[in-house]
Length: 190
Image (cartoon, rainbow, N blue to C red):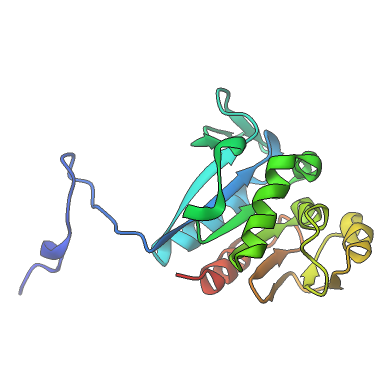
């Protein structure tokens, strides 16, 4: 029987080299982000050969999730442009509220919307999309605490756990996990 692994390319350390189809930008709050759903999103995207690059307002320090997981991001928000990415995902959690007024986050979400790229968010991070002014007429799901801001911004607010509307994928809260990741993987343009 032939070895099925002979087609794999390996680097100098014996790790498989994966050719990704595109890359999605993940924007993390500097603290209190939802690391569990973030991991599900990254894993689901990787399954369909979509890479992720994580950025935050902080770069020199570890960002800390709501469960106290520490995470080292790969870059800083101000240095990014959506030109090299197939989409953006704003990571949810209590800390995402701080991103609603960040000019770089708003700029990146607006760039993604103008280019028709994937835009994802869950929980409190969905409010960032309203701050960016890109949700008029879009059907989204949001927690009750963010509902008013999304309605004022012109969004059609639904009550499903995960919703896909055009190039937008939104999740209700931190319970969406793999369902949110699966929706991202199905919606991301290649």
